[in-house]
Length: 330
Image 1 (cartoon, helix red, strand yellow):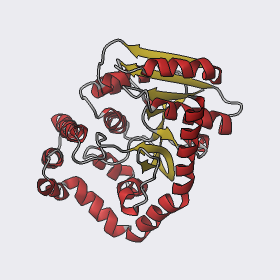
Image 2: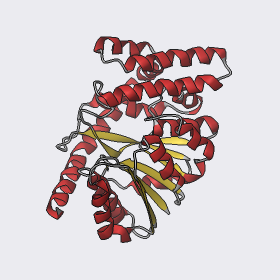
Image 3: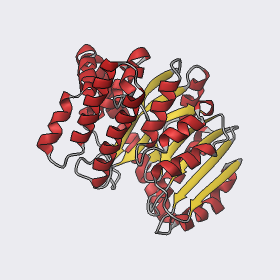
């Protein structure tokens, strides 16, 4: 059984996109398979729950098991995330935020790679509220860099804010109370903390990267993709705390210094001043990125173009098709 986790908080206008994209995957590519849906609501103050319940009434038969995790009061992203992970019953799972949606490509081909790997990391494309895909190639440099961050470099880089994280498909067997406790130490870095703890505590963990969009990420004034949003500043402060948590248990004096520098860099990224934010390029993490960029320049440029040019149009049409379908249902 495969588990879809959809998290929601005050996303009544958008959660249907996420749910409809899950339905598309099941109907288009999931024939003969069994599915669990875990749908969370973290104390929404809008009518998110009513929207979710109405959708489940019409589409609940798609799933062998449905878990509703509805909180009366808001507990925060990390608590919501951990509660969902604890309810995972499938052999593997993925997590989708309520304002994003799955891309129109067969994600079960990705799931099949878990026969060889423990975590399969995928690319993503960003889109605006109107459904226009962000097509600037350089926007996705950190995404395609995942192809070259492997082995010992992966274990080093992940503690410095390595971009490998969601969207990813995980084996359920990687989850543990230790992972859950680590995630709960933070407020916003739920997926980063999950990936970091899993990789650090499992030196033999096997990861691979697929250069095809798996999730379409919605960008807005309040998203972490926006340098000037309060959410972005809080997220960067939490990444600094993530580095600090890693530094507390690091035995190597040299790497503790590196982690301290990375922690300060994360604080710099939280600044509202664009000039101060430029100092982030002096961080150890960006040194790794720059080294890999020089080493694999041609491959990276090719992968950026392949990711965007091959897939943006179909992804944009997919979003607009779902938007039209939701509009007709309403």
